[in-house]
Image 1 (cartoon, helix red, strand yellow):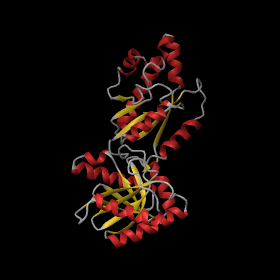
Image 2 (cartoon, helix red, strand yellow):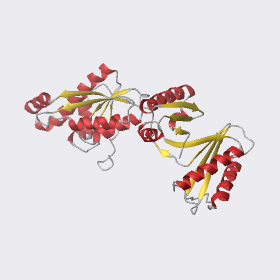
Image 3 (cartoon, helix red, strand yellow):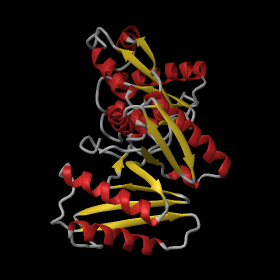
Image 4 (tube, helix red, strand yellow):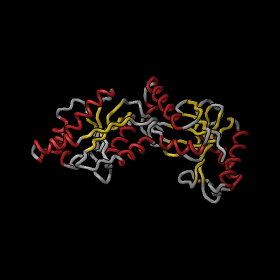
Amino acid sequence: MNYDLIIVRYGEIGVKSPRIRRIFENKLIYNIKSKINCKIEINQGRIFLYPQDFKEALENLQKVIGIVSYSPAVVTETDFGSIEQTLKHYVNELIFKELFDPNKSFAIRCRRVGQHEFTSHEMAGFCGSIIVEKTGAPVNLSKPDFEFFVEVRDDKTYIFHEKIKGPGGLPVGTQGKVVALVSGGIDSPVATFLMMKRGCEVIILHFNNYPYTGGSNDKVMKIIEKLEEYSPSKLKYYEVPFGDYLKSCIENAPIRLTCVLCKSGMYKIAEEIAKKEGALSIVDGSSLGQVASQTLPNLLATRYSTKMPVLSPLIGLDKVEI
């Protein structure tokens, strides 16, 4: 299928005030262009993307936070003759590529923006009649096997059949910076990703507990590489040697306090790095009651001397959910 463009949709950005919406749209466009070589137009809540390489663009859009869905589409003039010709060619291509089976039911989903001499219902009926005449496929508006989408926008009409799901969320960089405590486990990377989905630019902070744990940071670097797939730029990374501090905790305090003192020290260092980087919060992978340092009393104790907010997006999830 030779497409003309990709229609990109966002979600909650659309409910922001006009000024904030423009800021968020511009950040989303910047983030898209950081991953895709393309030309972009924006109009009435839609981003129209004209990529150099469609295959690459369709793959990379799945990693752009802030995008709810996107559709490769063809475009034609908003007149019945042009729409009929384009739709017939589109159906031919789908049948040829075995994407559309004329023996199965279909529906037309029509959306209209602007002033026209027809209603959305009338355009849907017109397009449906073209496909029935050409293929004989049955119409089923409630539970079709296949959907065609016709989006009429002023003097242009867009035809497509896919709505590919994006990661959603808010564009990375719209909600300020946070320092994310990332270990080699699963909890902290998931917490970091969730904060990225809420628009935060993350700074990665890893504590190397050697000799109490392995000294290699290979696993952490792989985690960072995976998170960077969803970031418009490389993630800033700090690694702090923490073995001496942990040794001091073990030797100079009751053993039952080791976990609390360890986590408290991490927060204090994270707070200093956050101040240096202009970050407004600390993020960790705490899940209530999962380990000793994550009971309610110990959460209070570990954060007692930290003035900066500590956000724990996984606090109510168990290991299976995480």
